[in-house]
Length: 218
Image (cartoon, rainbow, N blue to C red):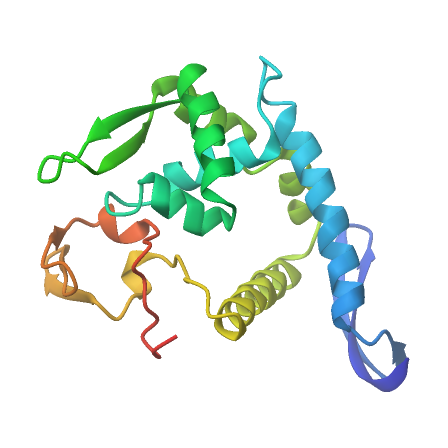
């Protein structure tokens, strides 16, 4: 515990008021306590997301794979990219993808230039499940219950924590294309990837990429 000046947010009759109090006792946010919060939140979110699977067949990791495939670009929808993103073994991811394919959530498509490369595409059933399950209803309700300034602070803090974990462990960032140093604007809603040379659309640059590199080099 430590004392410091801290902002306090109070709800009165449906309105939020902000105060700064001195000598407020605050918890020291060490890694252990943060882990406990994140672990408990993760359990609650996964339990809620599973309820959206009417077949009751999918495990959390399978929903996570579907969500990733709904967000990634055409360079990042391969089995190897899914393995990198989830941080699991090839065997585990291979089994996960087989289940998703056998249940009609994804389909495989050979690369047009290299037939050895397989791309994973969501089916209509897969897209429908992602849209109904993610973000989970309990998360939406919880976030909506926070005042807008706190929502923004929470999003910023989680984004910074994610980046710090990735940098300190030398992990791929899987960031959004438009934030990548290889993304070059050509004007009039046209972009180019300077790594691959491909021309990108406004929709392309909103997707996450396996080759993402931060503009600051991270």
